Image (tube, rainbow, N blue to C red):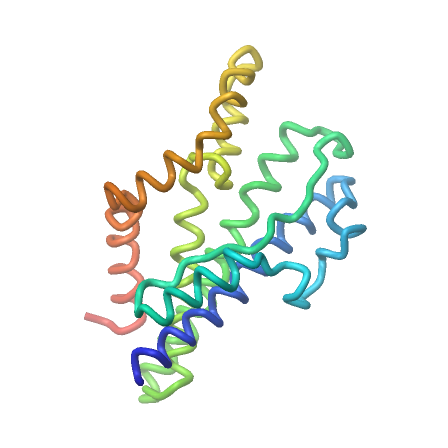
Length: 207
């Protein structure tokens, strides 16, 4: 029962984290002149417009029931680079603000969890704070991988010369295959995230 409760807490943390991640993309795009996300009703904390049936409900629920790590995503916020003042440069910032938001949320939750731990509060609130810090760490690092459609791929698009972009755009549809192979066949993400998770754990709980 304790494991199930922890998985439910992780699921709740995931939903909040991915929604704030997507909203941050839309808010930054709006700052650069693109109101597509605003007109689509996506700049809202209401979770319903953001939920993806597979990524936000089915996959995380299956992970909870199977006692596996909680994974998932929200529906991407619609963005129209043509409405921005400097599309290529602006899209870099729009892409990176998502992981940046997750890292900021991770820091806030980590300090919250540390203060609870140091104050001797080892109850449910500590579980919530630690889970939120960990989920945001996962999302931030995961989305910084330079693989389409993850946000880190915007770095590649920004540094590639214009003549190389058509080849990159041809590769983009296959990014999911590369991503899933790296995640599930070679555990690349696990190897990348583990050192960061250890640092976060030492910061919160000492040792």
